[in-house]
Length: 308
Ligand SMILES: O=C(O)C(=O)C[C@]1(C(=O)O)C=C[C@@H](O)C=C1
Image 1: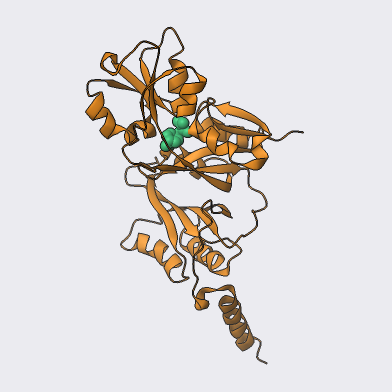
Image 2: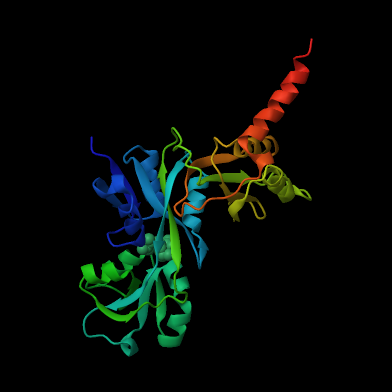
């Protein structure tokens, strides 16, 4: 059977661009989903092999819909990541000019990245949220559309035959969004030497130093964190979990040891995968945190216990 991949659609989203960067997905069947949670539901129910969803933008930060959907519900596993440079255009139906616009629609993360440009150039225009940049652009083709312009990718505007009223309207040059490829739990991708491990750690009971207790599991094993953010669990006010990316793979002794330590203090911990870094950046690990040092220490203790 041909493998199938889901993504946050419709066609023309940045998420589709991320999926097309995956060689196995480029020739596979691709299913556009209406939201991040419905893309992940297709994975959970086994209807697709994996789904591509946005997780983090260099300007606007974490994508809450993704952070929350992978942290709860049936377990999922991240098997890869992709980086996509983000360039936005303001697209409209034929015949309109900037001064004519009353309402503009796009994805919340895209709107946030163009806030400065919008307040300088279309200050009186009302913002209408959309499920994705491409959904906002496609809506313009509908006769009953309630807005007159969309912020989207240049390719989406071109494919839909929209007029581009302004190009490159993001407030920060070189903005990048990180996307993750998510499957059901299974065998881990092999370690490459430039990997990332993603975890969801519920804050153990609220007491002074609770967060410090989590962080020190990484610090004492020489594990660098590349992202940590707190999200509310939704259960009650003040109840949080931490979404964490650490440098390394579960097959690295220091990562496995840190995760064992975390499991002792926060048994509700979720392992969300070890997978190759998209930027292939290497990270130095001091000798005393390398696998050999962990194995030597383990054997040294074993030697003492094995004494007759
Ligand atoms: O709407 C899209 O085109 C998406 O792929 C979603 C998304 C996001 O969630 O951040 C992806 C990249 C951009 O940063 C803006 C929107």
